[in-house]
Image: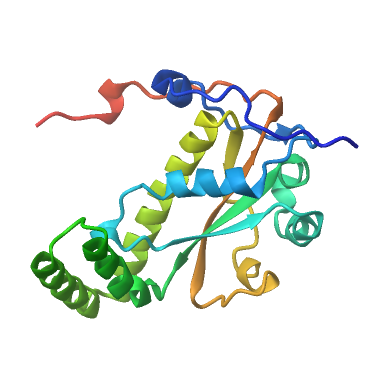
Amino acid sequence: MSTMTGKFHATNNFSEIVLGRRSVKVYDPEVKISREEMTEILTEATRAPSAINMQPWRFLVIDSAEGKEKLAPLASFNQSQVLTSSAVIAVFYDANNIEYMDEIYGKAVELGYMPQDIMESNLQQAKSYYANISSSDLRDMNLIDSGIVSMQLMLVARAHGYDTNPMAGYDKERIAEVFGLDKDRFQPVMLISIGKAAKEGYPSYRLPVETIATWA
């Protein structure tokens, strides 16, 4: 089997990126995304915002045949996406992401993004916030942040010329452990398949703004 690599119809057209996105179930299995380009995609995706810039998201990129063999039994409702996509990205949040707080704020000073005194004030407030937040509120915050980065990842993939599909139908209880991750620390959010569509996704109806929005 020949291996195809490279970007496909990459675009900076925002309307095409947003309005042309579809959830794709079947991909061209010959199309592979290099780890260099996948790193670009993830780097661009992580420009998404997060609460006090804590960036709780973590990615497990499953792009090898061995990795897909491990994943397939865990995603029985999404076999075509797992087996034909270039990769499946398992999105987790890190329940211990507070460990990176000093690095995040310290690097902001080192890179000239904020002065030392502002960093110290923000860091003190952030540590106080984390010390007092309930576990359920922290989980909600991490899930929201991880959802935001997941949507950005799908849009970035579209800009690179690839298609995606977010998936919730998999064994969330086992996925971390199967891939050698600490299941207490790394909490599953969703799977995102990525590749080049072999069969285009269908357009879908959206409720009108009059139904979903209220002005006050």
